[in-house]
Length: 124
Image (tube, rainbow, N blue to C red):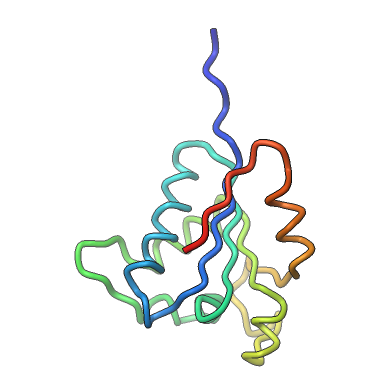
């Protein structure tokens, strides 16, 4: 009997450099889920919004952890990365100022994603 395919995973990160361990954990879980074959959607909200800006992830280093930039690049390359629309507006971030592959969407999109059958949502 074939094994069931991994379920979809939505990871929402709400923190930034002020909670680097939690931020890195969310990125690690999202990137690891991709390698396990899961469909991954990463949401950057609150202070994690700054990760959508080129060069920001490179400034984050956490001892004994994979580099945030590598984890983010993996998720952009294999999953979907979304920047919260309200969070982007509050920080003056717009499409042209973001990393390629990151889109701005709102709460309706987040709710639609997490209410699909078989989706697991985690918040960091």
